[in-house]
View 1 (cartoon, rainbow over the protein chains, first blue to last red):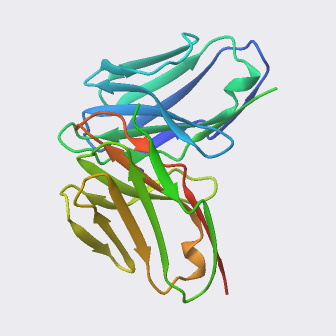
View 2: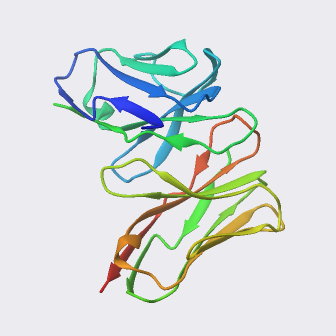
Length: 112
Length: 111
């Protein structure tokens, strides 16, 4: 069973489009995260939700909007995609009481 | 903000050699984690450290949480080809907060 899953694995789209990436975790964790990994492999936090509530919102353009319908899901919607949004996006989850985060397999977004 | 300095940036070694990499921080952390990322995959947790001075092993991997709480190292003994990948250190100063990642150490192993 996959602990943290993301769909799609690859996403190729045109500039200006709107797209969503879905994430689900079956670990029973309270907290979920979105990270962005750039071409130099640097991992940076974007958002964090705890029990469906936003607790971390780094300096991310408001074209990015996370949505958590329940504590097992955290989706990422991106409006008006730009070339610079091309990256690999990782979802992760953890229990609040520990810092150990488990990552999904990533979604490679390419904006043309 | 907090930053992690991870070194070396890359390593090229022969199969069977031991490897050591480390991370240092300008401020203290309560948790240090070491992850490995294979191409096209997400980071996978290798070792988690929760206490200053803690030394933890996972097979051929050993990691330590520095007593100053500002550093950690990861050792890999008797490397094998499947050890190839990018190794990341990550730290957190509060449970449930975002991890701060080092920039990674890319390991190449030749057989």
